[in-house]
Length: 164
Image (cartoon, rainbow, N blue to C red; front, side, top):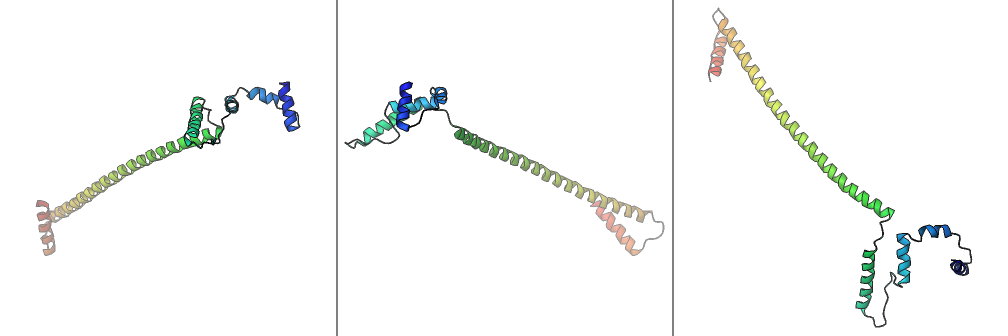
């Protein structure tokens, strides 16, 4: 450890003061992988061989990807938040669709109810009209005095409507 401190002081010109943080994080998965990559001398940059074989460089990259799959690092805070937002977005779209379908079915039921009400009102109006005609006919038939020509015509018309 003393040798590492001396090397750091020689390289940077200041004393290493983050030893407490290093002790906490040295076994952390993220930093262990980073030191393992440095030890194995592989990097993110492509290594170009003098022979220029593209196949060998692809093999090196494939080896790095296999190592990545073996030692998957947990997702970061930003990645977790964006994933959660995407999932919530899908859920919200599903909720919105479900809500729209519910509102649409309610609207259709309301429309059907209005149609039924309109039909019943029309039937009520027809019944009221028939009742009014019956009353008029009853009044004309109840008269003891001789009916005028207009009243006779109205009585005959009402009787023919009721019989048809």
